[in-house]
Image (cartoon, rainbow, N blue to C red):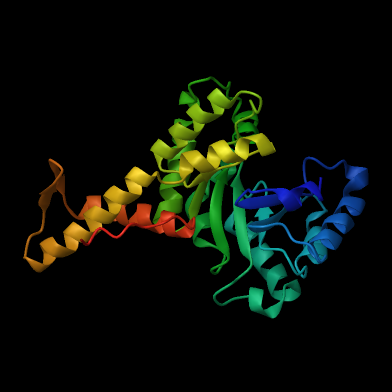
Length: 283
């Protein structure tokens, strides 16, 4: 599986030391992942390691093994329940990561998985923690449902509150928000519907559990050519309107004001981050 990751086109790969690894195999898995991330071949995109949760007794050995690896980009912290969990990971980064990853423009990133009711009650404190290392909040729906006794439905209505709360908190503190896993990995139509739903809510992306899901997720969460073109036109026209002393104006029979500009700027920023072409609309 490690070798297969070299050919993945996923934006971020998570090498798992947690749920997918039996207790007896954790030391072996830890060594294999560390050796792979120190190797000469490297998978494209972000390379994260999902360590074992704080309190399991495995988490310190996990971090000591992987934080100094040459090709690691981020730590995925499962069952994040408090700011203390995040800050403990930061303390380990300060001890074991390369100096350039301890702060500055390219810090070791932390991705916090929100998996239970305790985490939901502490969302604000979690989002404020990390001293610049916390990068994203991820909704781990299956564990969340198990913790609260929620019965999943196709509509996901029962998950609207936690999904909205995580997204809102992430936005308030400048973090990315990643939506729940689609467990029906053999059902692309279900995945597309879930992606559309998450995109509509405002999520930045979605977790994948199978390589076949990656392309659909990337297509759903990347701005379309039409959306990019319109966003570029809005930004260009807004600049002209400002120079003419107008606070709001019409474009294509729609009113354009500051909130619409903000949405357009978000689309262009996402397009640039994805390496997509931004059209010249000044002519």
